[in-house]
Length: 378
Image 1 (cartoon, rainbow, N blue to C red):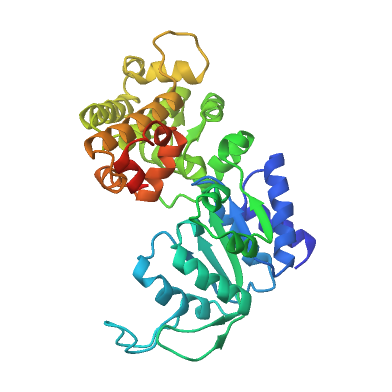
Image 2 (cartoon, rainbow, N blue to C red):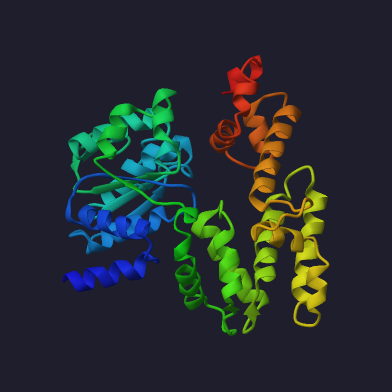
């Protein structure tokens, strides 16, 4: 592949020309030339899988398989079988031989997403495979050599996980030969217009695309984007639904973002309030083309003032409101579950590990560490 073709390919896969993205492309070029294991870090929604695909695409393994595994989504009792395979009759339900994902990835790349969620007992077995390049199917006695490039990714702080003994230090160093960090969207806001145009071009709807005004772009660039590129893509797609062929103004952007937050809050104890907010949002969107004054009568005008840096004492900062609401929901779930983390996590429909991450993020664990049930649950 020529240098020009390589540049064009990376430009098509990794949208944006900020300094952060230029540095990321440079690291990807180096990673594509080697066979070493790679650890990709970055917040959720920042594009870690896109980076992994780019590395595979420009590598010498590009003609081989490229298999993605979400380690957090695999049932704990099936992780070994899924990754390394099993022989017929090796356990109840094993009615056929199963070739594991590592074998399926032979001569290609396997992407282990959310590696921080892998059970501790499986980390030992993964380390052995990485060291020996040999897999043994469950219930089998045959050593099967594999030639696989391993790329791992996580949004977690593995340093903290190593300290808490939930992630093996030797596995970390085996995986993190080439570290690559994907920047959060709020670290490269100058790339937002290019990302919006990219998402608009790739929308599958037959309706005319919306047209973002300069003021709309300015508003997009002043928001903090806690959901990163994934959240931006949702907002652009939502704009395509409500503003097909129309100009999108700054206040429209606020409403499009606010409807995301209202949806996120629906599982909280203030679900009725959130639902009402969502209804108000869509009513304002629906009446926009007929009566622009209707928008200015909605609560979201105040949110716009916050994003634009106005000094109204009644303004609610969008990001601060979201963080405070998340903290309140976590605390309420713990209180109603009497400090039992697993029960609290189920009550708001998130994973236990995610719940614990959010506790640490808001320093809730420190406040409750004297609670005996909490210590047991953690």
